[in-house]
Length: 134
Image 1 (cartoon, helix red, strand yellow):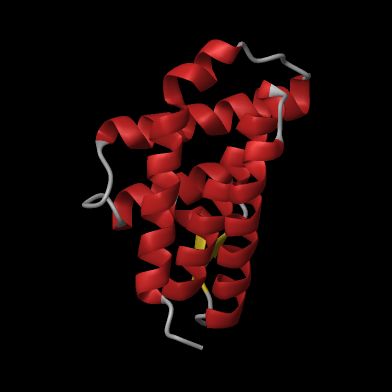
Image 2 (cartoon, helix red, strand yellow):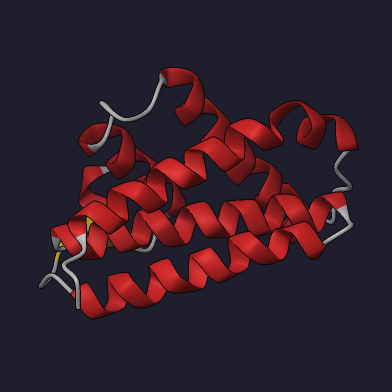
């Protein structure tokens, strides 16, 4: 997994743009009615925020699994094991939706939406702390 993560120059501009896009997408989720689209959007928000963190740290990956590996390896003090499991479960559901047309039952969202929002807000706070005021 580590071989899928490579060093790059830090990019505050890219990180800031991704964070802003993630925040817009996060606020737009409330307008969505379809469960599968809501899950897709939550995962995209999380993915964009982790990618922003990587840009701030000077790293990049093209692998979604490596994104989660990076977060767990470098930011584990901010998240519980259950939160990492939920992020990965959301990633897998998003893949099932996107690549296999799987319809997702409302139960997953009902049981996990508040936790996903909590994870997302934590990620936003972490990115904000690392971003200089530009």
